[in-house]
Length: 274
Image 1 (cartoon, rainbow, N blue to C red):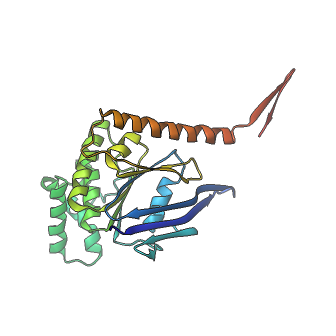
Image 2 (image 1 turned 45 degrees about the vertical axis):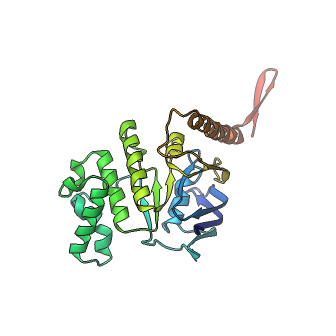
Image 3 (image 1 turned 60 degrees about the vertical axis):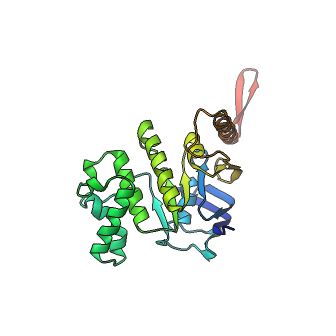
């Protein structure tokens, strides 16, 4: 039986603006993630998806609640928890090979081993021929593949991905979704993937966590019981997409109603009351 690799207990997060206003991002968020799961988080903008991911990575402090990795509280970054950002975050003065081996190099790994490992993961993402190139010489999709290879080169237990394909064109995005599934099936890492795309979530995930509008909570957990590779023309696929889109629209509408003043009409004047 697979054990829980990440346990999120009643996590809350509130940001304070420069003017002192409180903006709640997450509220009483609880979730258990098992080994080898592919989880997608979807929700309206501002619902705390990326904030949650950063807290799981130890990049953002957990003030309310608790996040556990294999029973231990996440208090700081851990090399066993890798992260891929939407921005490629590659060092422009280093070659592709040296970017992929960066984490190992910083950990004190001998240079020869760094390069051997980097080549291994560049082969995995189909970019070994570009090992001597610099990031500016690559397309956006290729740069994101390098970022994924760099994260995998550190051999993380968990891979957190924050909208990694969001800036790519539709065709490249679909190609990289297929590539990511191949990598996941070969390595069986636990993946937590943030996306705004319902289609992407259905195509990739074992389980989809639909979040409420901010402050983010779990609206529904959906098990995607479709064999891979998934056919977008499958009526079940379309039905699930419509269901999730309806849930997200419901959240957007309810959040707009919560902040829109109610208007009362009287003869000769309009009075607004929040």
